[in-house]
Length: 370
Image (cartoon, rainbow, N blue to C red; front, side):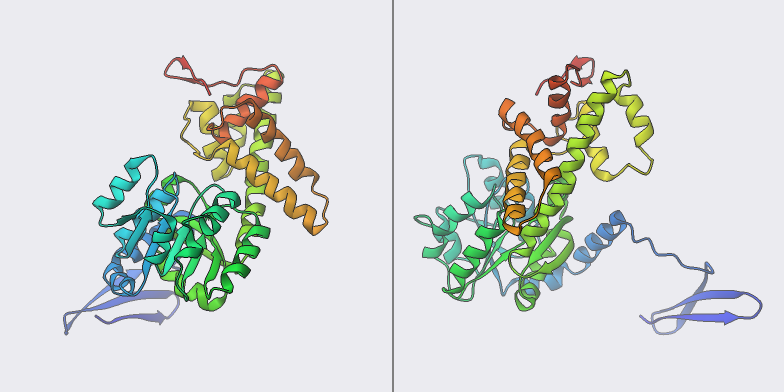
């Protein structure tokens, strides 16, 4: 099929789109004088999904050369692993107590291993998606861990939000074994993980990034090669500082608004669709306005952990980070009060309670609990 565009100019410019059909017929359609391309985040992710669908056969051919391992079938990891195996890659995973993700992956053709060592031994590229550095270090260094099974030339990719200091140390350690270590932390939610449209910020050499890119494309709609190993986790902490800082500000603003007689819905009527609106604000507010506890499934415990990593990074860099510490302290109180598995939007309820106002939402006529 041949496509070309003819531009005719007299007093006005008219674009004509011509497309050959079979080997002879030509169909021409007038186009708008100016073609505008929609590059919104949603449209970019849609084009990415269409491209992945169209190139699935090609990806399947490429996939045959790389065997993938995966550890961490949690809220984010299950969706990532699902997309890897669905796009044609051979996948070996380590199951967990919650058997539902494992059963789902087995049904899609993946294989289950009994130990981290077995996952590493069966894989060329192995992904880790767990809570943080403590868990990552145990998977790599612990008994029955990666170091007992990794082959020379393998790549380990940490998608967790980890401490950059630990990341760099592990990279140096594995380099001595002929293994590359990459940090590729995530942004967005389990919904995008399942859809294959997560954001990823990747720390890796150019050569290793080029090798990983086809695999990352199976589950990410936006991939940024931010720098060398360690830079992915540094950038992730900065990203979470901003997002969790928003959460702390929204929570305190909602508490103050309620205290002076402005309800959450009236507060929202001004912020929503104004200059202060954003995607994070909209998902955050769904708990307070609608009682939707699953709007943003990122736990307060993980948020607090990430902010302690930020504090450590700032201290090592020798920079004062008063806003980071203030944000951390807002989450510290909610974390201490519990329960540990509550989600970030519920911070507003905690901040309200501390200040003597009730921001607990109502859903279908019933008061919600955290």
